[in-house]
Length: 326
Image 1 (spheres, rainbow, N blue to C red):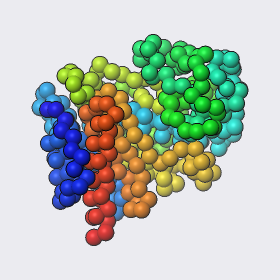
Image 2: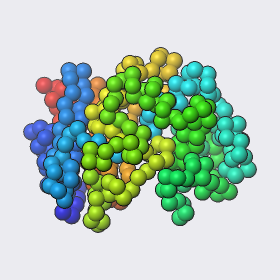
Image 3: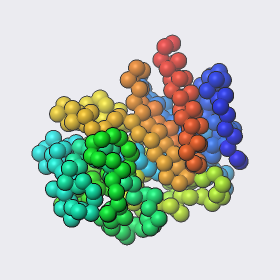
Image 4: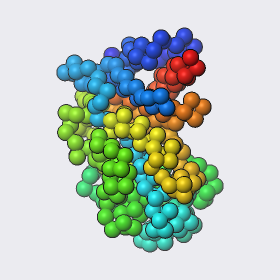
């Protein structure tokens, strides 16, 4: 089905329920959608459309999903913990942390860990480099070398620009600081204490049959096994429930100490979006209604398509707000 954008979507009356809203979203061209809502009174899980379009398997609200850049929330939390423990310093420079990038990444002697966490480093994006192949056998620094000798996007801390290269480098910094994979640290210090048994660092760790299929508009095949992102800040796979539980714990103090909470709040938000071919996701904490809302859609397209995703997400949040006022 071709996606049918509608600028009038946000002007239409809200549906009677989240489930009805999801069915409407599917009728407009989303292949499948999962929503998880966490509020003080409890949580709810919803789905519509297809988990597997070709096999006609209905969307499973407990299916695993490639959460892409939502992975950065977990890395930011792990970095926060190491900073609080004194293992890392937010004001350490990139060249102090990764000496070999000196003279290769512009301003490496002035860019700090804090700037990289906040996407204020000016380090160029590696994903759009013509030689990036997404080869899982490449090391993080092999990938980082794609931006060596490139001009900075702007001077350090001059402004904000989202760059996956920041978290690629942070992944390497964490591994060197720990002496082992940051994935293991995240599992031990974040996933296990929260009982998140349906969150994984890499797609290779899961049974593909448990993962929701992913579709890119204009390209027919299922993207689930055709595209596997392994770089830090984009590699994780999880259920909507696990993502919601994690963000709630990130917000309410059940994961971080007071010291860690202060550090985290200074460097990263309590929300993120995710995009990898075939998969789009949003998770946000809404303090006005004390709710965490997660939206997974197994359909992707170009930048304009994101407007439609945000419209649907906004309508779901509006329904949650309406129910909270009753």
